[in-house]
Structure formats: structure tokens, C-alpha cells
Length: 161
Image (cartoon, rainbow, N blue to C red; front, side, top):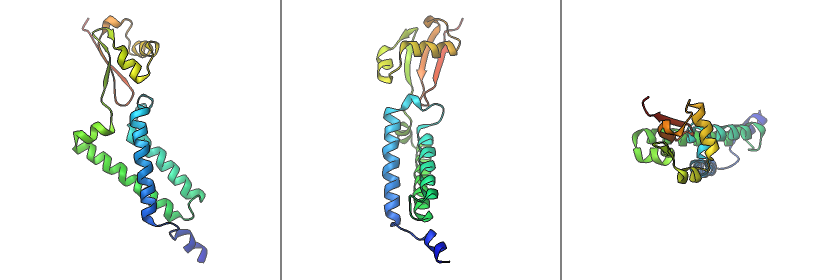
């Protein structure tokens, strides 16, 4: 029975694990938000971050890099708490929503490529044209507005034919 109690005793103080989880969550959230925006795909930034951190925290708890399961569970609960809190705050506050999810940015307006935005987002003209072709656009003159959305997708409004 001693080995079972060893498995669940706290090796580190709970506040230590909460602090670790909080620092890692916020650091990675900022990295994803400001550096990896267009590579996120269809998941929201906070969602992708949550999945990655939960996988890592769970793995550490199961593989024994933490000495006890309880240490890993405290970290997981911290991450779940931050994810829920940010989702709740984003729903209730436009300011928090803008912090978590970047705004959509125009890439093409009235058939003209906005090269400054392409440079800022590190998107080549060839990549843009490829995405437009995927949307059924053959010529830039068909595009009224093409926006890079917060999830990395391209949305396009065409001129009426």
C-alpha cells in the first residue's frame, strides 16, 4: 500500500505547478498569437495551444517525469482552467477576443494585391494566387476583397458577374 500512496503524494507544492503551467501557457499563447498566426489552420490559436500543452502535461504525468500523478494533474487542471477562462472572457469581452485571436487582414482589395500585408504575413504572391485558384478565382480582377482570417484561412468576396 505504501507504493500506491507514493504515486499520489505531491512531490512539488501545488502553487509551483500552477505557476509553471501559467507561465508556459501565456508564453506559448503569445508565441502562437504573434509569430505563428497563418500556420495554425482551422483551429483557434488558444485551442491548438491547449491541445499541445495538455498532450505534453499528460505525457509527463504518465511517463514519470513528474514524480507523482498528482503533480501532473495539478498542471493539467491549471491548463484547463486557463483555457476555459480565456474562452469565457473572449466570449464576453471584445477586447480579450482581439488579444486572443488576431483580426482578419486584407490581402487583395479591388483586384489589387496589398504587398505590405503579404510581406508582414510572409505570404508570397504565388501562395496567394494558389489559394485564390483553390477558391475558383482565375484573375485578380474578379476579387473585390480577399482576407486572411484569424484561423489562417482565406476568405474571398468576388465582384458580381
